[in-house]
Image (cartoon, rainbow, N blue to C red):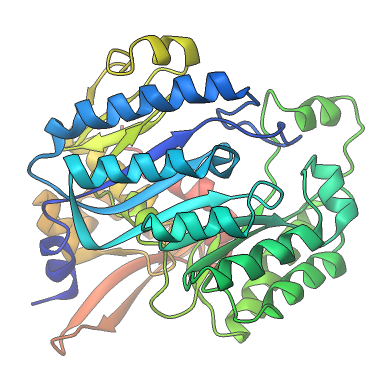
Length: 398
């Protein structure tokens, strides 16, 4: 059996669940996520609604085994740990949760202590994602982060002591006033942690409309590294992390062997997922839908706030297969494309692929499969990664 067939067979009947906790201590200056500070009363009203939606949506997932759970935000760790326990208890009671499920939560330093992390571990969470962003306190202040490097170091130590063996660290590059040397220092500090984290997400700052940074940029008050420096930071992260034993498996993500984030890989490989909470997106049986974003509307009717359901056409599925799959460094499988859609990759996208290969942005390669056979894959080149949005946009079919 080929790897493509193995992967397809082993994802049938599985679904991921995403919980959105839209609260934070204060909004970071670059953040355009659906999140905001809120008092305890509002938090509890929302979380009770989230429990209701979780219970009521279970009927939609009877035929599925839940393979991954991800609690994101916002800053999920800003709410009391008992609410996280209640959510996971609800999943176990109303859904078929795999005994090997990956269960993740995002936490920010300054919002957790050793007791809260122990509580998460007892609740069954087995993967933490900790938002460091920078090891430089001045850079953290410039981002509007609430924590210091020392608080991050405390958080990491407590996480290890609580028994977490799968920890991701988020770092950011191309920050205001950041130099290549200061970004290198952040990476080196992460690599000095003991034990080493199992996963590192390294994101380049994107200035999003509607943020404080966007307004500062328009006013000429945001001094960002130039494009050449930003790309130098990106490839320096790849060089340093790969030398330390991390595999660069997705445009912005690195993992030690066996620790790629299963939940996020599910998004890029188009597996089914159910989003719960305001603004949460879902894809189930090639249907995409999202919850509305009004907090009070959600609290009043947690199961009545789903937006329009979009049934993906075959064309839409092909487009997503390509522009999501090409985010993975291994690229997309010719064989899996044909098995999924009944047409060959070159039949559908031959002209686009040829043009981008000629421009040095894509390449085909073969790799050996578990059964000793060969599989042909299409992937971005190094230059293609630098302008990945441009390449991926060409896979939209007319």
